[in-house]
Image (cartoon, rainbow, N blue to C red):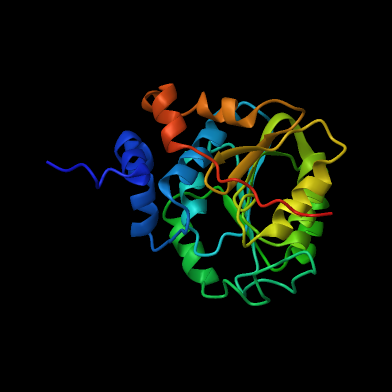
Length: 253
């Protein structure tokens, strides 16, 4: 009998039935995601790790809403999920960006995402437009705080804009996950994160694939998030096999 079908994503699928159920609910609601099970598992873990920290969740770069659907189903009803996306593709790229072009990821539908999320929960708000257009309104609320931030924005300027908005509004122990930090097609994303945190106490560490994370105020995000995964994943050998970050692209200069 062959078990070759039990690849890393399949094992995550089997060992994390609650994630499987919630992802299928998102798909049934008409939402889609490009994230694999391992990266989605880390989003769920981050929500658990930050549930007692003041603040909402926010996602930068939602595309077709699948990851937002998983986040929303795991989020406490006392917290809101803020969804930031133009739903019209990427903005102009900067010289630091090496692959994506203006208009990438335009193959989405704002109304479809709204309808799909509405079937999963009511504690979300959509901020439609480029970040520099929509974040000033969020910033005008002096009480706005964030406990969990998911950055899947790919581009240098977009990520810097997101970090400049969120980090001053986050308490120690809050978590930021960067979906693209280790991606060879998103060198600008890594540059933005490294630049922002260069003189801060936080350390950015690998989770799985291109996904990296940091804990505001300092600490090891990998250890924190692993401690909030289901019991099966806490077995060291299994965790190290399933959740292995990609090597990041070295940037000269």
